[in-house]
Image 1 (cartoon, rainbow over the protein chains, first blue to last red):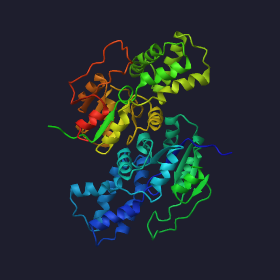
Image 2 (cartoon, rainbow over the protein chains, first blue to last red; image 1 turned 180 degrees about the horizontal axis):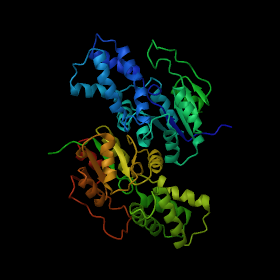
Image 3 (spheres, chains in turn blue, yellow; image 1 turned 60 degrees about the vertical axis):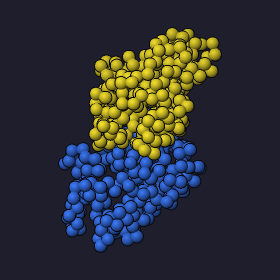
Image 4 (cartoon, chains in turn orange, brown; image 1 turned 90 degrees about the vertical axis):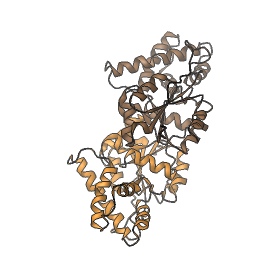
Length: 232
Length: 232
């Protein structure tokens, strides 16, 4: 039996915003001769290992901004552009606050907002998500960040933290993401789940094909498609 | 020297929304023969003593929704309307999620939003503020609640919690409130402060006159006036 969710919680990097395209564009403008596609992928690839270090308590609680900065310092060396000074590094690191939405995101979210409470539920820190959403006109009802729960997805504390904040049943929250691992973890906590297929998340030449998943409550081609499937 | 703030944090009950008028209207419609003005005042008057019990650790951490409910159970008896059943009590308690903004609030906030990050910083719980803001079309960039810091204003943890979340200097945050006590506490933490005069906060017959305060960085007659004074 379909239970109408009250809250839609969205993964953001890759699901709502195009991190790869946004970073390739800025980095390409900054360093015209550099392989911006490889740079963006290298930066993103260290994101999960760094969060895992935090979750294994090899690092104290660390915001994504600071994890991104640690990775950036390393890849600037790797790509031979280590001449960047401190203000330039700081500015480049904040490219994650300037990510652009996929073309369907704002329109889809506006439709969903009339029927549901909509919020990001991202590992991005609270200020990153707030700044990014303001800039991109993402019409969230509130910002939810893993930072509020001092745990990174897929830790159950994040999904159940939303359930507790809103005093709802897990099934009244639907997690929306382009990543099956996120949705499997949300499903284990009793949340509903919607997969959004983002074949271009890693650009035109992903290391592995980005497949559609149909093992969740909904399988969607975009956020506008999610709005249609939820009857908006 | 005037430092332009980056974040405006708003007290909400009384400052952005008219709790007295909203409660008088709903309670008056529910119980036409009851003194709704006295009922609203009785409900609100127990709010600070209840939060103080939490802050003195006489009670464990308790959301405002639950504090409101404890007070409501008592005043329903006091006003002779204790026949309300559980669903009716629950619905009435959520009147705090349905508070209406002052006439200048939405227009003023929209202007401020183009220049600053705007957020509530209220003792109201996160879901209360999210639901209320959605219903009232308050165009916040994010929701900040004392609940996120597990401390009630005027505890410094609340004001400094905002500073830490956004990694800014205290002077880059401006607290906006209709209550001098809130602003004095924010000022002690190094925040900028703007007073908004809300002479009708306690209705037409307040127990004490609601005075303008001019000891803060700004003294405003409304949120639209704040927008003008901040150059929007």
